[in-house]
Length: 161
Image (cartoon, rainbow, N blue to C red):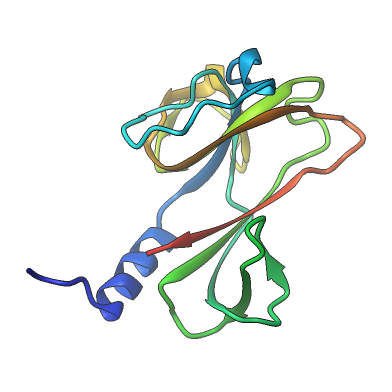
């Protein structure tokens, strides 16, 4: 059986880094506040998308015991200038993005298309402006939290390849 090599993984990470990448958030289902449903591996979209933001920065990272980037599972990473098989995606939402909405799901999307005539440089797209969602790479479901217009929401995601 063929085994994917680290150089191949690095090539995949580099190819993905060059794509338009978005983080979408959704309302999900209110029942998830008690017990979130397990994430499927066959989903093509979120259950109830609110909107999505274009990635703010993409960097290669490496696992590092003393790294500055910490994930919920307590794994740590450090930024590297050398391409690796891990990508750090950082999404910085504006204060008003989805203000007042309850968020219960997140999804990283690669590509997608948007309504014609939008302002150049627009980085946040409400669901109504998304024509095709692109390819769903990862998704997460969780107990809901309310978006507050007084908080600048930052999400960091490490994608393994």
